[in-house]
Image (cartoon, rainbow, N blue to C red; front, top):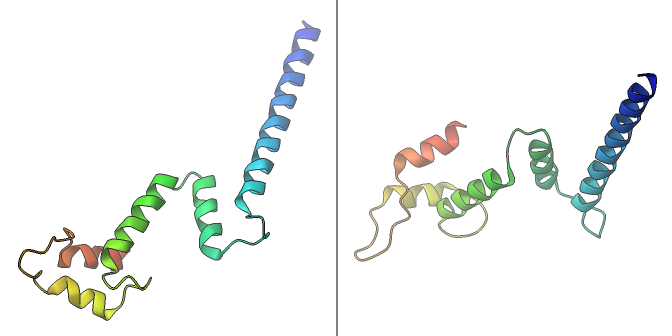
Length: 108
């Protein structure tokens, strides 16, 4: 019985060490070859790592941002918000976003 307990404890210790090594490898992959990450990349990594969000969540958020950034300058500004309030030109494809969408984004 004593050997079974030791064997089980050793097995658990090895598994914990393997998990720590996998975590270190994930962290090494986080930092690009230049050895730097942005604040945005760090926040995304930490939220995924803590289980608060998934990579899919961040893909969807980025897609939503790009839809709202009408002039594609990487910033949602007053001009983009004004575009939400204008009716689309005749025959134009719409983004599917309305006034309520932008209010929800800024209410976060």
